[in-house]
Length: 262
Image (cartoon, rainbow, N blue to C red; front, side):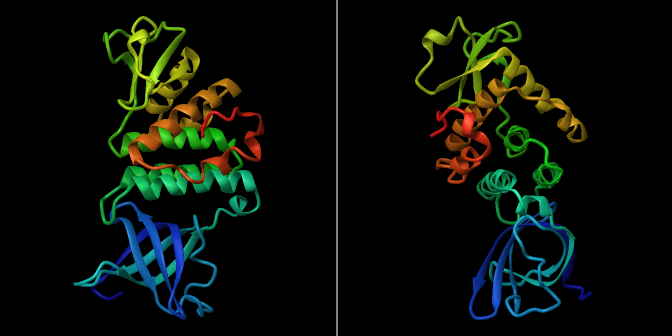
């Protein structure tokens, strides 16, 4: 390996044609962060890149950074996991697409992001094991928002400071990322969504559990509805744009979920 070359684990977030034979690929790496690189000859490659640059693939990447310019040069890529289940199920693929879109919007080029990489890899593995897709999206987002600096406060009322642990229902203000208790809810704006106590406890538990235990959390239909509604509104507020893949997420598996997320 050249002294200028580096190696890293990487997850493919985007891949598009560039010219007649090349591809530009966007990855998430634990230390290099989000990285875009040029894979020369990838469209014609029969060995170096064939079947390795598919969306969501986990790779061992060898690359170098030029002194000038934004694009890295991708020297080699070894496939570590392709997560084939995602390509054989519309529901799993749609969930992975929401996770991918949020990752692209919530990360920055060449900004170190070990925790974001860890939760992304956890989510893809969970989907590949065919765990409930909506639950995986919920668990990914509640941790991802924290890792990019926007942890929702699910313990106290933003107005009075009281614990919400005994409130049957609270309002989540997606503008501030905080709860509003029942007593203070009459002062709330039109930027809140309701959360039941059971849903709040599940989401708070998801914030504190180690990644290897997240799969133990079980969400009822009501908890999934409320959590997805809250996270969708919160995500749109954070990113200041719509999450285009969200409608597809609710389509095949989510036929029973209410159309309150648009």
